[in-house]
Every structure is written in C-alpha cells, then in structure tokens.
Image 1 (cartoon, rainbow, N blue to C red):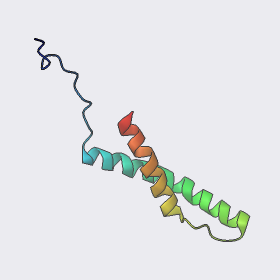
Image 2 (cartoon, rainbow, N blue to C red; image 1 turned 90 degrees about the vertical axis):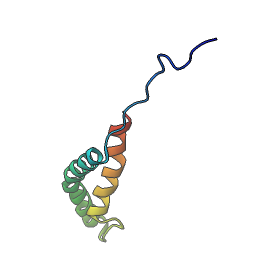
Image 3 (cartoon, rainbow, N blue to C red; image 1 turned 135 degrees about the vertical axis):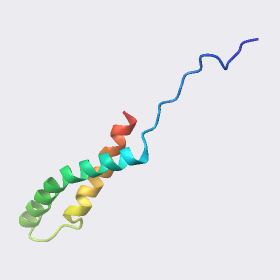
Image 4 (tube, helix red, strand yellow; image 1 turned 180 degrees about the horizontal axis):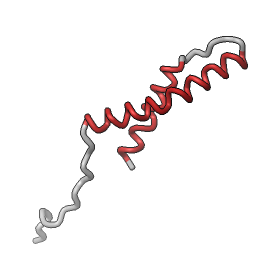
Length: 72
C-alpha cells in the first residue's frame, strides 16, 4: 500500500491581507495621475464628463492589477 502523506506537493503560500493592501495602495497611487489625465482628456474630447470619475478609474485599475501580482 502506498503512503500518500509523504512528499505531498505544498500549496502556494498566500500573501497576507496587509501585503495586499500595501500593493493595492501603491498601485492606486500610481494609477491616479494617469486616470486623472485620461478622465480630463475624455472630458475635453467628448465635451461632457465621463461616467467614471478619476478616483473610480484608478480604483478599478488597482482592483484589476493587484490580484494579478498575487496569482503570478
């Protein structure tokens, strides 16, 4: 009979919530100026304010990018 408890592959260690929050904050801070520029450019080009403000755009970018770092 085979002993399956020996040399089991270990799962990947998950990052802590504090580490996730730190990365999220850094990415959000870096995305904010670009989101502000994109929002302003869109407002000038179309003559109206976009649905998403610059904070919402930066928040969405940070929410998309941060999990990619933790799953890589």
